Length: 335
Length: 158
Image 1 (spheres, each protein chain N blue to C red):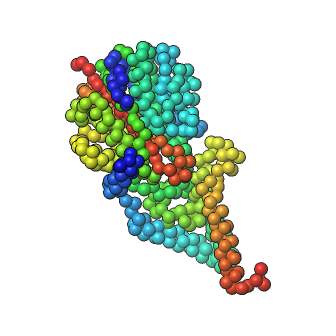
Image 2: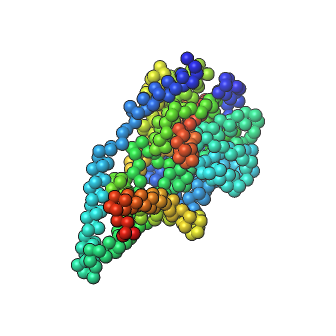
Image 3: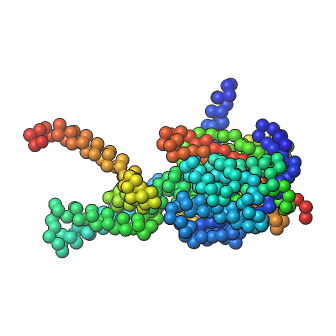
């Protein structure tokens, strides 16, 4: 049901039936290794280019998800997904393999929650099974946006590391006690940050705007949630977001306001301020967070994935970085 | 107050918050590290020069080429083994400015674009980063050359 200009409530409460996450070598060494379905110890993922490797991450995340739900790609009505490679070829090529009718999305690192929102909307309209998934690959995305990986440039302390991971979730009308109940779609926010090595600072105001709009539209507050999870603000973006919330008159408890970008790596020197990438929020939410909800650690959470909508071209033309954030409420119902 | 002014104030307020919280680049420390690492690379270069002059038939005027070639070889080798960028994170300009940095920028791009083939990939992209060094190096040399010629009045030498 349409609530306001930005928010939806899903009366039928679509379920997340299953999910799958496939990751690369650095993520496999991190603290979430027990939550991932499949891990590769090589960045090439047995392919001959990093772009193909990312495609494979997406494919395998989808097939892992379907296997767990015991269905085949033919049973799935639609796939919503996207990534950061030019023309989102990583995801569309994966859809060629899967043969599922495909909606290609681009919301940078916010794509995971954009896809989940749309999947819930379509399931509410009567679709039987809908997949939502995203993937990113460290080497493919660095090549797209920054320098060659072996190039000796010094990264500032605000820089983040792109996650090598694919994550997918299967949404259906019934079949589990984990429900997608609400979402708030973000506006594009640009507060004039221009440094592409400081994505956290660029994205933080978009997250704050979407979360505050969500609270306003549903007349709720942080007290109603066990966890408010942002996508990939990193250490820097998270601190700035907390302060920006305070200036807007909302004080979030530090423990309740977490970030996916700070959960993937332990002590990875390249990570600097944290992890990022389209696969980042998908890899954390569709593994650890859903598992912990099933185990009963959280009952109701708000996931707000954030995306920086820049390209190497706009950066070189000295444009600032417009950002977006989409929030989804995931709830465990019943015992 | 118009909507636009309000947005502008919001942006300025935000940028103030952001710049207060974000960690600063350690400029002074980076300069010190760059000075010592860059200097150390020059010391290695000097050792190689002395070695060539002592054991082979090179003199002060001719030893430059084999020394640079050796440094480039070492830099490309370290880039290929995937460790040059690790050093660079520590030393910054110290490893970027010497000839080793130039070699690294070419080798790293060649490795990166190998998947797009040898002609369009490696050949077409190798100078992606190094190209501007060559262009502006040549332009700078041209301008300095003209200034030098005018200043010294050595027209006859041309």
